[in-house]
Image 1 (cartoon, rainbow, N blue to C red):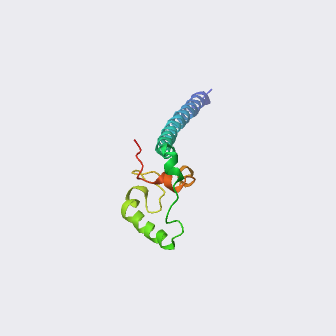
Image 2: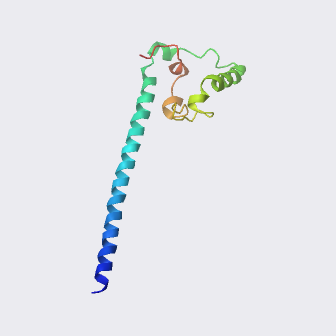
Image 3: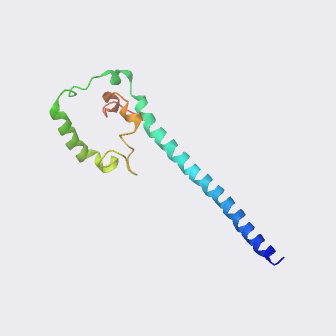
Length: 115
């Protein structure tokens, strides 16, 4: 019977750890759900590009110098928020996400009104 308090203590510890792990798992799930919802809302804007804008061709798509020029523009105007490799940061979403990379270039054009 001497081991009875030890068993109770160990059982209580294991039970507490079990419930703590459930609570932490639920909290992580809430954070992940919130992040996924945020990402979906950010990328949902792309789908609002008008068909007329989506149909436009990129006039520079065959210009080899355009890639280098685009890289410079990205570094100057976009990298601060979207990260040096366009993988996103706290300030801007990833531009390498599938929701972005499957879009026609004109859907990413900033000249069409979004709101």
